[in-house]
Amino acid sequence: MQTSETMLTLYSKDAHSFTVFRELTPQGYVQANQIVIADSGEGLLADPSGRVTFSRLLAEVSIIVPAPKIKYLFFSHQDPDVIGAASSWYTALPNAKIVLPEIWARFVPHVFPPEVSPGNRFLLVPEQGTELELGNCKLKVIPAHFLHSPGNNQIYDPCSKILFSGDLFASVFPDQVGYDFVKDFDGHIKYMEPFHKRYMAGNKAIQAWLNRIKGLEIETIVPQHGAILSGKDVVEKALKWIESLKCGIDLL
View 1 (spheres, helix red, strand yellow):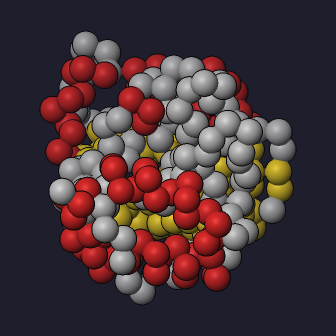
View 2 (tube, rainbow, N blue to C red; view 1 turned 135 degrees about the horizontal axis):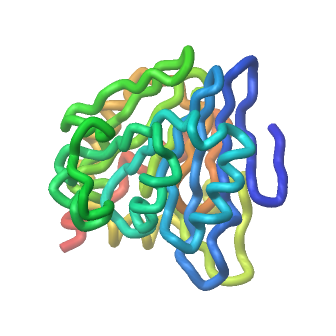
């Protein structure tokens, strides 16, 4: 694992890498993680956040994969901390397919340049998910509907065995608290639980998601916000915790 001031390389072997950017959001804004998956010279950028991170993230991403080689620009759902700079990224990554849930295609005119419509550059993910070929690796786009958005997707990278989980397993730290990796899961719950109880739709949605990921070998979970869950013990505890969580409409 390689680290720098702005990026964490969670996996790098042969021609494949998985990198997380955690320190690009200015103080006072909602902290967000951005990821780049690269294989054989091609790249995928996921949930690139809003305009406050655009310039720095573009420069950092280009170190890993040159902008013309970014094959996919992945938006998990429609929140501003995901698509806030969509228009700028559309221009900056001219060869990238725009990957977003099919349900949100009707919002394209509101966030992309006025002349853009869901045409050749868009890959609209159906309700059941899809697969994306990146170099020699085939990524899985896994639906996580209502966790928290009604149209919401995650990315599972089978080459690194890393799941980019979006808002699921996100944590929110108070001022003066923060860390990159979860070491004490039980102590970490207090930073996840309030967010999940308020933002996740309900345990029925969680059970549907658990059925979809059954059989996947997950060694690391990278949420869109907060600390990374890495290692078999931490991942198992996280899945056990989420399985019994009551949230959203369960609490009405």
